[in-house]
Image 1 (cartoon, rainbow, N blue to C red):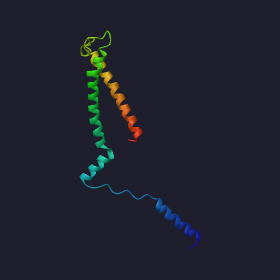
Image 2 (tube, one colour):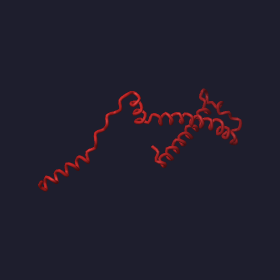
Image 3 (cartoon, helix red, strand yellow):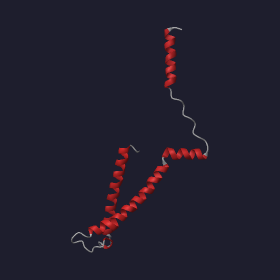
Image 4 (spheres, rainbow, N blue to C red):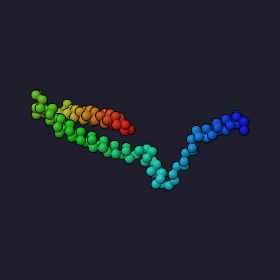
Amino acid sequence: MSEQELMLEELREIRKLLTPPPKPDPPKGFVNEFRTFLSQYKVLGLAVAFILGIYLGALIKSLVDNLMMPLVSLIPGMEGIAWEEFVFGEFRVGLFVGDIITFVIIAFAVFAIVKIAARLGIE
C-alpha cells in the first residue's frame, strides 16, 4: 500500500469515529411512551411546582390578611379600620390593597426561589 492509500484509510477510520451513531428507535408501547413523555417534558416537576405555588399563594394571602393588615391598622390615624369595609362607592379598595400586597410578596418569594435555584445550578 502506498503512503497516500494509508492516509486515506486513516481518514476513513477517523470519519467513522467522528460520525455519531444513529438515534435508537423510540420505545414502543403505551407505558414506555408515557414514561418518555413524563421525562421529556418534565411534567412531574411542573405539577409539583404548580401545587406548591398554589399553597405558597394561600400562605402569603393568609400572612397579609391576618398579620400585615392588622399591623397597618396600628399606624396612628388608621385605628379601627376594617380593610374589608374600606370602600369607595361600590369599590372595595381595602381588599384590593390587600391583594396588591399579596402579589408583591409572592413575586418577591418567587424571585428569591429562582435566584437560589440558579445559584445551586437547578434548572
